[in-house]
Length: 313
Image (cartoon, rainbow, N blue to C red; front, side, top):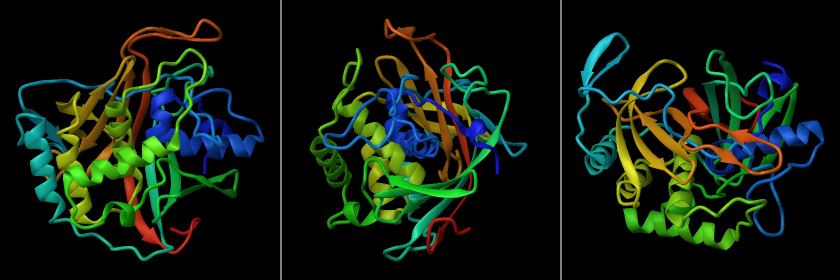
């Protein structure tokens, strides 16, 4: 297990909501420090949601001819636009039944990622890789990680699990409405000079988080894939590379300052990882400047399986 220093990170405002919020909380708890800024649910702040300014795009995004090379075999991207990606990914979800968890169980996740820049500035160091392990409860409300050998458990964002999203009938409109209502009920408070993101952006980020950290039944995943394609501003990117060097296709969203990619395998549409990049210069007029083109997140899922409790593999 790598040291706490290797995993120290200051999460970007938006990426923190969807991908790194739980990690930031765990690391802040390990350091015994309070988070410095970021979006805060009313009543209780569950960690620093960031100063690195949101992302997901692609450090190695290369829009090309429609041919993706993965595992040393050429693969033709089987989609032409975001709606076709949503439909094909939804259809593939039904073929991947996986392991159905029981209430009280957890999803163990191991991923490779680029760590925070060694100089402590915003962004990640894409020349290095570390392995991160975490556990998320099946109900979606908790996340855990081992920090310096100690298991730390914190609240999770957006706090939804499979049971919340699997209420019949399961439709794209239904699952997105459930997520939207949850986000509205959280009454997020945005600090500093940050402008609140649109609900469309928050919705994309919540789906981005759920897909990467939850064990969801095929029907729910299919509905989320179809739903993603209906969110205004969501687009399709042909060729995105994850932290393990795998090429994939992606659902993408570009917000006011950063871009997010949710990367899927171009053949079986399983979740591969995430990527993020700053798209405009950002200066909060107090402590930091983030330049356009700064890579903000880069991950690749290596393993995921249902276990009986946090800390188990």
